[in-house]
Image (cartoon, rainbow, N blue to C red; front, side, top):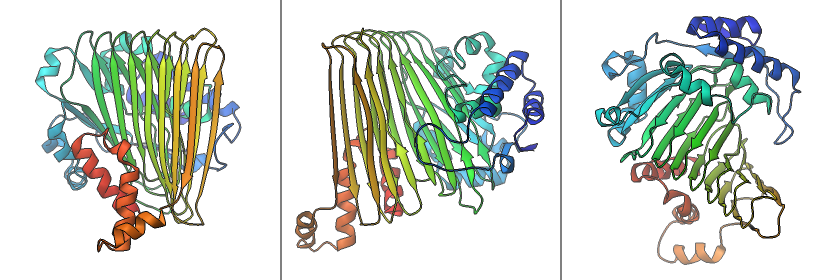
Length: 436
C-alpha cells in the first residue's frame, strides 16, 4: 500500500490499514490538528520549506514481520546485505530493520526472551503490549510542541519498542536499522524505550538513503524512560543522502541515580535539525550527549543537545564536534537549564568546530540558564582550521597532504569515536573518508 499527501482521510486510511485501536487513531487525528494549526517554520533552526502534498507518508512491501532473512524479499535482502546490515547482526543481542514505512525484520537472542526483555516494532507493541505502551506513549514528547513532532504523531509507522525489566543487564547492544529507498519518501518511525529500575541498555541506530532529485523527509520521535539506578546509551550513526530533510525529536526522562547517554553522529542529509534532550528529574541523575556533525556542500547540520536539570545534585555534559567544508554550515544549537530547585547541579558544555575552507560556516547558539546560586555551568567554544604547523610536520614525514588532512580530522573526532563499539568506529572512519 502507498499513501501520498497529508489529510485526515489518509491518516484514517493508515490507521485502518494497521487495524489500530481507537485511542491510537484519536492520537493521530489530534496530532494532525496540532500540525495544521502551526505555521510553516519552527521557532528555531534554519529556514526551509517542504511541499507536504508531494510526500509519500506510507509505503510497505512486506505484509508481515519476519524473523528469518530467507523470508524477506530477495531484492530487499540483497540490498541490506550490501550495506552490511546482515553482517552487523552477529555483534548484537537483537536487531530490527525498517524498510520504508514498516519494520520488516525483527529478531532477538533466546537468552533475552528468558529475561522477559521486550524488543519489537512499535506497531506490534501496540497490539501485544497495549497497556504498557499506552502508559508511556506520547508522554515526554507532546504532539503540540513542534511541527514535526506533530507530523510524526499523525503518520508514524515503524520504529522500535523496548522494555528492559528491573535488575536486567544486556551483555550486547540491541540495534535498529532504518532505510529510505524511494523518491519523495517520508519516514516517520516512533521509538519508545523503557529501562526499568536498576537495569542497563545499549541501543544502536543506523540510517541511510540513496540520492534522488526529489526531497525525502525523515521526521522521527524517540522517547526514553530511564528508571532509578538505570543506564541507557543510545548510539546513532546517520548517513542520509543530501536530499533528505532530517528533523528529529529525541528526549529522555531520567529518574533518581539514573544515567542517560546520547552518542550522536550526523554525516549526511540536506538539513539536519536534531537536539537530543535529557530531563534530569531525579536527584543525582546524569545526562551526557557526545555528538559529531559533518557539513559539506549544500548541507546544513543544525545540531546540539538540551539538558534540563530538575533534581538535586544532577550532572550533565555536552561535547559537540563539528566539521564544515566546501561551503557547508555546521551549527551548534543547545540549551542547558538548571531549575531553581536543582541545587548543586553541574553542567559542562564544550563545542569545537573545524572549518576547512573560506566558504564554510559555523555558528554556536547556546541558551544557558542557571536559576539557583548553588549550581555551576561551564561553556567552552572553539572554532579553528587545520594548523599549518601540524600539516607541515606530518608532510615532512613523507605523508601526502590529503592523507595528513585526513589524519588530523580523524584525530579531531577521537572523543566521539572512542565511545563507539569497535565495528562502528571502523564504519565511521570509512564514512568520514568518503565525505571529506
